[in-house]
Image (cartoon, rainbow over all chains, first blue to last red; front, top):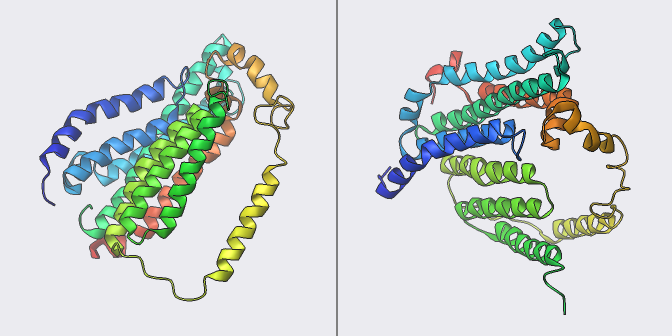
Length: 141
Length: 186
């Protein structure tokens, strides 16, 4: 694909802000609108923007296929793991109050961990779909 | 004359809905699939603005990022694979048109039976929702009620959602990925 200098420079400038904004939405989702789903999508959008400007191959050097699969499974593991951990600590499945002495603190910790898990799953599924389409055509659009 | 400052919600709603209608008609009538996918991205941004007018910022962020970002990219990848000219549909178009218009008319008529927007006595607000809005900040310590309900009160449902997304990813991998026998095919 022909290189367009403006696109390359703008994406290179914006990429760290996009990724940092995704993390902001993830962790600030308890106070402002946001949360895990939105953060995962925006994080994936940053990587897809990078891949559209450079090759799919250079994205796969940074983020290999097996790493994305591992993140996928890890996200579900974190979510279910939080649930099982609360059961071990004496509460119900996904009953976050069992984490700390004050129930409200336990809820905050549980919600934050669960949102991280959700973000990882959403990010990795979008990257997997993008990789599957991209590999099929032999290069990106 | 409508007093614009007092009815800015109504004005914004009417404006956005008119735009949505125009964009929807042009998506159907576009012959070039690239044009249609960009128009669908515009449709998603307008829907995100409508969600903001309806006071749902979490949904607006999700709709804007998924609809105008990821969806457009995936559509463009698909169009890159199949080509950008749309095949003309042969055959009668009158019967499908009548069917679509009658179903749309039924939906518009049924929407008259919805409760008034934001009313406190609607079925969605008179169940457990009042308990959530009263007690969520005290019990969970999280100011965003939507996140508290999603991740704490209804955490089991969100777990199911995450599993559904995970399963969708696995399904895409199985259908389109290159493993085992398919490893060397393009």
